[in-house]
Length: 598
Image (cartoon, rainbow, N blue to C red; front, side):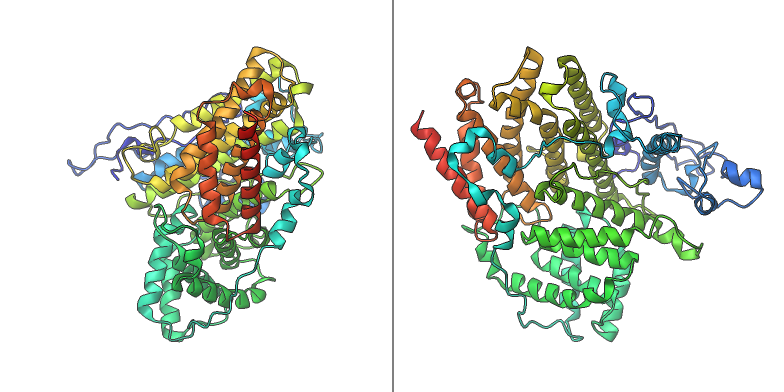
């Protein structure tokens, strides 16, 4: 990718301390240099300056951003009068522009939390639209029950005649799912063939690592060379390699799978090899439980990714929790060492990936029954890896874009959990939702060219998998915005034209989600189970509207076609998890009922 292209546009989550859109300006005028034919899209500034604290103390500043090591140790705010991006290559500068804006946003939040009434973290009044862009809305507050999941929909009064009973207990369904034999006798001994190991590593890098860049490729290849010389050992590095091999065994390019059901793949040599490798990694995880290093966090995170890819969400959540626990030691290093600078971006990346993955599952599994789950985000933004190469730019932009959407989703969730449509004025509701819509649109417009979602389903297939995931997360945000109004519509409690329009948008999101996810219905990856859940939820919402007399005639014309598409998706995965098979049965039964009464 050309480093001078407009793909360096900033990725925005739509938040700034003063409530306005963040639009970092990137100066693209070339700067004269000694070589006449060499031009940079970003001018260099003068020499690096120390932060304000180091200048006052007359000490050497290591210029670490957003906070230098001296300020971390002293626990004081680190302020640079002049940002100097000259030590980064041009491909990283656009990302740093975004970091500078986010750094100011985060500091504003932290400063407000240090004021006298720091224990009060209640969300400010929603009458001022700027409040809806505050990071304080990404933190948990007093809540009302407004769960956005399948079990919540099945509990709606419109379905009370179905008498689902214990079928609403998702945890029981997942625990009752059949377990897979993990003791296949395939070789993972020291004589594990070099060619096969390298092949699995490459499949992992091509089809798994691009979605969560939490590893350093050169480091992994170093582990691989050591394993070739000494064999698979019982340390964290060997555990990490085994997990990489396991994921490489089941990872496939983003394309439609073949076969009537996913059970065909589970009978394959590749899957049996993956289970054997994962089982070998599990044996080594016990020794990692009392440690909190980067490699240990990477091991638990990749174990969670593997379990998610094989539709075992409860087990995956436990792995993500352990990975987050490992990350807690990253934030305040006790000493300065030469290696810290190199691994800083790895610490930040693994922390964010663990945080996002654990939060997504926690919300879907209803881990917290009585109060809204803590949505507090980490207080740093991942820094770009050193020497960011052109082929890695799209992956890193994707990673930042996904994080920005997660933060927007947290703000929307906390607003929804705190406010109900029936308990808030129409004016406040209208202002809040339009504000969130504007934030989502600003995020979409800030995407670089390589990740543009406009017409992502047609034409250019470059980075199709990355666009597919971002499109799904954006739909998540829109679903969260309109969820209270969908509930009110199904329950017949809507008031006013504006509020009614939001419920209509909510039903359109259900159609849109199924349509845009169709290309990934049969692809196995980290988010497959969550995709099955979200599309099934959308189908159930459409069925709820179809069973509601005053809504049936107002449904989009393609609602039935969308539901039948979900049938096909669930039918393909029905053998892998009992909850998938059960929800397929529910959908089929209710669709027959609706059809009979039309």
